[in-house]
Length: 76
Image 1 (tube, rainbow, N blue to C red):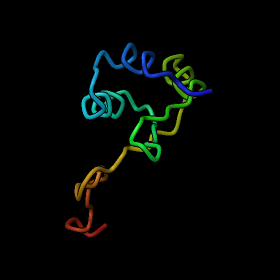
Image 2: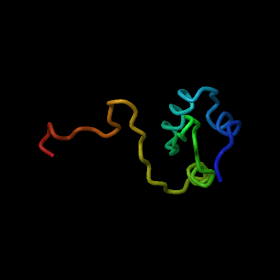
Image 3: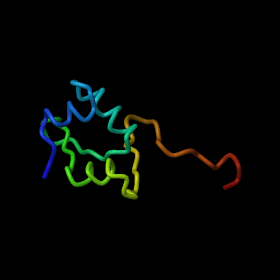
């Protein structure tokens, strides 16, 4: 149902949560953090993304930076 810690390390090629999240964001893979800060990632979602299926991508927003551009300056 969810990736194990070693599967997350293998998928991302990284061992720290901070760098794993960076790689997951770049790959378009959704994740959540549980109550003790562990990454929770659906195996089904990863299979869909890596299998090339059309998956709606939601970028994670960290800190005060938004993942979406601000079009207000161009009157949109």
